[in-house]
Image (tube, rainbow, N blue to C red; front, side, top):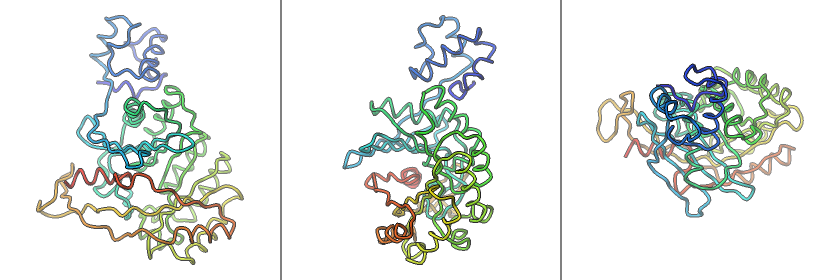
Length: 362
C-alpha cells in the first residue's frame, strides 16, 4: 500500500484514484491540517472514495512505547515504535521562548561517531518523510501544546537521508504550515550535501557537529572526517552562509581530556577565523556519558539487533568535561560568540539514542 502521508500535494494530485485535483487538496488538508488518522474521518469526501483510498493507501502511525517526563517537567521523551517494530526517539522541550521538538531522521546511524549513542548498533534504515512528520503530529496529539520550532537532531544523520528529509521539509511547510526559519538541521559534516542544501536556499539553520579542532583528533572520534576533512567542511560552511545569510551553529561536545583544554579553545578560535565575520556561533555541549552497545560473537547477556549482531552494554570512556565555563570564556575573549547548552532531561536519558540503546539491551 502507498504511504499517503509521504506524498507531497503535487504527487497526490497525480494519483489516478484522486481526481479531479481539488480532491487531492481536500485530502491533503485532512491529513496535514486536521491530522486525521483514518480515511473514515474525511467527512466531506464520498464514502466510495474513502473506501477506495483505504484499499490502496495507508495512513501510517507511531505507537508510544515509552513516555518519560523529567523531574523539572520541561522535557518529555518519547520512544516511538514504528510499523516494523523498530524504535526511534523524539524529545519535546519547553523553553521560556517557546516549545521545541527534537526529531530523528533514521533508525540508527552509520556515521560511527564514537561518543554518540545513536549509531552504537549501526544504521538499520532511513525514516520515510511520514515517519519524520508523525513525530511532530503524534507529539502534538499527546502534549496538547504548540510546537514552535523543530530540530532534526535526534537519531541519525539527516544528510545521509537527504531526499526523504527534503520531502519532509516540503510537507512541513505546505501541510503543517511551519516556516523553515523555525527549523534547525544538524549534521556531522556531510560536506557535499551541505553544498547541495546551500543551492536550495531553504532558510533553515544549519548546525554542524565539530567536536575537534584538528584533522587527526576529529578523525579519531568522527570517521566522517576521513572523507570530508576540516578544510573541506569549513569551506562548505562558509559557502552555505554566503548563499543563505543564515548563521551556522557549530556544536562542540566537551569531552574530558580529549578536546577541552585551553589550547583546544585557541585552536578552535583559529579554525573559525576561516568563516566570514558574524557567520557562526559555538554551542558548547557537556558530552553525554552513554552506555555503549558492544558486538559479541555469542548471545551471553546481550540481545540481537535487527541485523543479527549481539548487543551488550559497557560504560563509555568519554567523560563529561568540567571546563565548559572556562572554555566558553576563552572563546568569548577571542571574539567568538559561544554559549553552554543547558542540560535538559538528563534524568530521563533525553540525549539522542540513549533510550533506544537501553531498550535494546534490557
